Length: 212
Image (cartoon, helix red, strand yellow):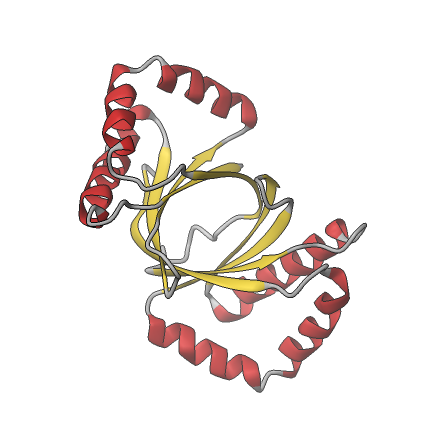
């Protein structure tokens, strides 16, 4: 499975209009045969909204783009979108390495821990994060996934995603991790596998994947 993420930055005073415009598009995605979701980054320097779409493979994505570009509805959507944003959107392509478990409720909040692999360590880092994510699914029942970013202006990264029903649940898990020797051992293993310190993004899921 592949995931495309498009992030949009609202122009001054247009935040609500941009959100409404994107929500309308995402809610209509099942009719277009697309799995789509909408989220917004919180505790960030600037407001933004991320439109995510899942594609079974790159051939499916290519067919989607071809059909979208010839769709008058998409042209209207884009024309309106351009009046609401302050700069060009960012686009990223990810490959799903560990899928978010289907038997866990879709999250209200998504914590994305972004790792830049050290030279020659991408496979080892991906293996470590995948094993840690799968262990979390089985032992804690939390929604955890791992994605590998294939294309963006910031280079390849591997993202460890954890879903939470509330900020309280996220805080409680952080507290338990602080005293967990297994987590300390995991941290010790991943430090030499990254080229720079990992960082965390926190998103509120406004609309979970439509058509799931």
